[in-house]
Length: 328
Image 1: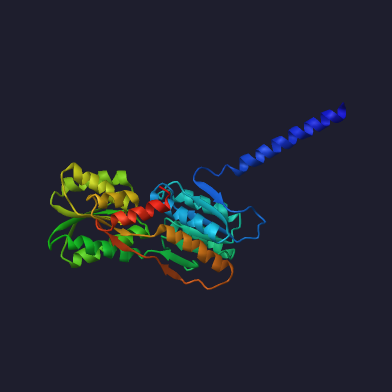
Image 2: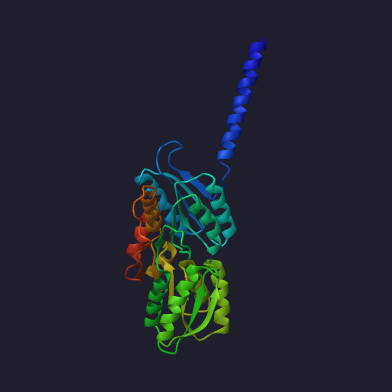
């Protein structure tokens, strides 16, 4: 009898232990998912961390990373902050991940605030590859992404082609202080000023569609003679369109990214154009070059991704491509 009772107690103990272990493994939160084999697989361990996951742009990058995990036989981990304005959460993710000792880190940072924790990866001889957002940090293995100043210039050239000398434009900036926003805005400003176009207002809207509506409504109230709008991403371009439409203003609006909402709008004659980016390819190449770095192979210090202007003539075709990536 005593032997049976001991056996039953042991079975209960083992069950509780297993449940606790499962609970701990699944407690990383809704903003993270993991892909790949378990520890001890012998595969290179590559972690991909994004500054946000709340917009389609980031979901395209997620698709690229996870496809690379499969194609390159990588033990991959994917993590992301809830939104790109929550830089502290991104830093916390990076700090927690450091203890798991990935062989390489591919990261889309938000601001320079991430540099101290990235430096700790460097001290552990872990290659750090930046995608989408560059940082003024010598420790990076490479930067893979758009030259944001050039992207701003391309947007500025297209917008200027729709206007005349002396016309005024409004600019919707992204998150204040971020390299992505500042470089895009600088590129636009340099081009339009050289074309004799005036900047009536330039206001941050955090790359957010809802905030862009409010910001644009305020700008249009104060500047009724605006003839065009540049938004530092497509989400804000869509917000600007809503604000302009509410006032029956038909204004050329140019964004940056190439997301499905903007592409649909462009095809239908809403937003005028966008500068296409390649978040899927950035993340895929990030994993690809991380594997090279782990093997000790040469990785270029900067890998520029393609950009291009998408207009009404090309939007429908591009929309189909993006939807295929997203399985829509």
